[in-house]
Image 1 (cartoon, rainbow, N blue to C red):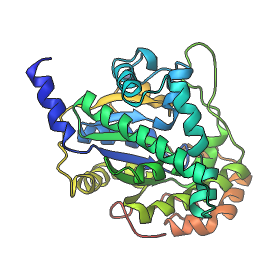
Image 2 (image 1 turned 45 degrees about the vertical axis):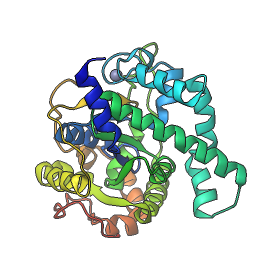
Image 3 (image 1 turned 180 degrees about the horizontal axis):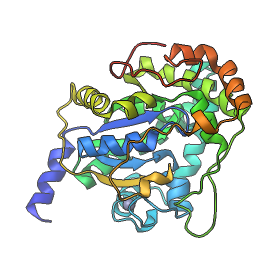
Image 4 (image 1 turned 60 degrees about the horizontal axis):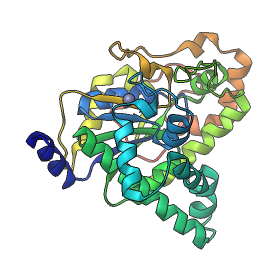
Length: 331
Ligand SMILES: [Zn+2]
């Protein structure tokens, strides 16, 4: 093994990777934020780690580098090392375990309502150990200290909060409920599914409004579990430099993590925009202002009004002034 590789592996072995975990509801801009943070930190964009086993390895979907996950030069050796370390036989075996502990309804039942279950606690610990091993192997293989995980689900982020071998930092990404409902209703082709035509799951306005309230409320539970910040999509696209600078300062605070010049992009699952090789475009996506039907707009506004107000959005749906900085204030 070349000396430089040995040095990198020893160096990162003593420093826990900082796992920047983005949470919130889908279509809120997590893929964009992930890419921007990876660029600023010279970190690794991992994508939605919760889908690594099912979509990445079992379905052989494409990584953002263009290879399928089993053929990706980043993920293939990481999986091989993980299976060797854990004694597990396949990604499918890991996915079976993950599905038994890492779902929002299971998180609600056992960790919010606190219904006791010894077998759940055992399986949860087992999967958290595997997740910890995976993330440490990702950091070592890449020789990077910052890993960006855009899984979004609170059940996944809650698991990260209990892994002491990593340094999780949670970003709760919020976007105007009307923009999210408009996007959720719009079919979007999955670029990672190369063998067929498949679309991202679409939802009607009632369903997406309910999920917007539910998932943002669940995300607030992470506030008590460690480093946590709220970021609004609208602030990110209106004032990207100020928003990212404040975020990076916070992400670096209290760590000895190194920032590198170049990011590594090996994102699994997420918005098709992650396959773009162009510089990340920061055009605010405000299509809903003109294209959303008046009925849909009013319905989503009425359903989500108290929370829209709490997050600083105008109920009239006008563009809001950016907040000063990413906030840890409670809405
Ligand atoms: Zn890749």
